[in-house]
Length: 461
Image (cartoon, rainbow, N blue to C red):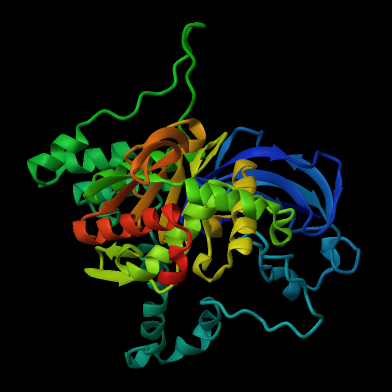
């Protein structure tokens, strides 16, 4: 029996993924839940487990191909329940559709349990008694049963109209900016997929504000055209495409304010050196990021207003009573911001372990979609690139992001004298709809005070 495995919906609301690599080949025997491929979504690389145990008969897509959700990507030859040919199955059982997996980890197909199979009821059954009902036609009495069937026939059309229009995140963003309801737009793409041009054409014929028409008239991104060796063109897709859309949305939605604070972090660096020699931290990776992250978590207790988000749809400010700490990570596929869940509950040693695991997983491109969503505040370490300060853009859905610069030895005022000290610049960007200047300044000052004098943690805890 040949079975096809279609690209599943990974639960991110996306309509496509790219095949990164195959872990199997035609003719290979695979077991249930064995990893057969890696696919890249707009956020991360995800491993696909096999929903069947059998032999690979065909790979329908090549690595590097972007595939729509629901399209077949691989075929298997599997045995049926009794190890016989499918024709030997009972007619009623064979007619029943079997549940196919549609999510990663959904598991195997549910096979027959051997129990009596209930015959499916169809609309064709009421037609059987019609020869008997034709006798009273001479009395000209109205027939009631056909009228009762009519509403049932309209249900499929009603269900279809309620389905969500098929489109990609950038198209939905464009439609939202233009005030277009995608339910009213006819898609011209594959399987009815709504494209940018469909939205622009709809706006061109609709009665929308002039600003919307100007936005719709903007040309689409140019397609990659083969060029000479003087130029190299790379398609915008995957993590890079998602990051670009998120940053544009954040920059033009949330009013950013950035503040800077330069701090003498010599005491923090001395503490870091002592911790590295401590038996309690043996085998743990400790960096300046570890101390900055802990300082941020402590400062949030005194300034909870920065651990919030602006809910435009419900016109509410959501205050988080937990901290999912995001850490910006540069990967070969682009910038990602995975987060540590409930980081505020972790001791320093556990926080150091979580940071090391998070960054290693992100750089390997193995971060799960769950770890890339739900962040409440973020840190970006630009100091590892030798940069002192910057104006970081907020991660969408968060009120603040802190950029930590490089630790440099500089002449600095210390105990009424000039001494060579280790200095760091902190850059805090925050959403001015949520955070006032006073709140942002107090939070930044608290983080700086903790790094300048780690003993202050006892007073702030």
